[in-house]
Length: 246
Image (cartoon, rainbow, N blue to C red):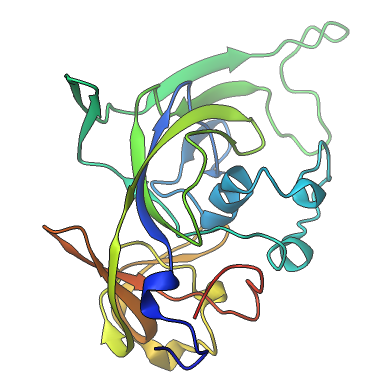
């Protein structure tokens, strides 16, 4: 029994594999030659797996994020995702195996029809260069708390179609101390988190910034699938008020 009065078994936690069914393009860095981050930030994943919450879905929202307004409405929480190493998916009696492929670069050369040039903006942001994208069937692993996500989603502003394969985990206990998360961590999601809680780790500067390969102090779920034990950081229940987080 947790402090909230709910039994540990009531928490639904899933280990998920997201498979891109088109070229996947998300948070990038650089001009002319852009490259995507290695990790998928969890806000994009949270929007993708909460399509049933109509009030957080927007066709166009400009450059202003609505994280503060939206995160309290979602019922499924997703951790940031990391690239899969080797994937095995069983479809009936058939087993499909694959490994992630190298990022593919697309060149582009957008010529302005009036000036017949490719660099015309006052800010000197060129319309010529290369964009990097993950090829189809590249996959990423993450965890979902609160229920099983839909098997088919659209990810990010580009609405890339993706398939999600989920496996229910057994929740063994809830810890509060130093642990090594089994996933990248978004520090903005953790309750009363401060730099002193970081024992070790690397900071990845993307939106939002992530902690990877870390050891941190905080509340966490200890789960298993019969073979492997997973340590999943518990998100702040005040920020994610609609997710079942005892």
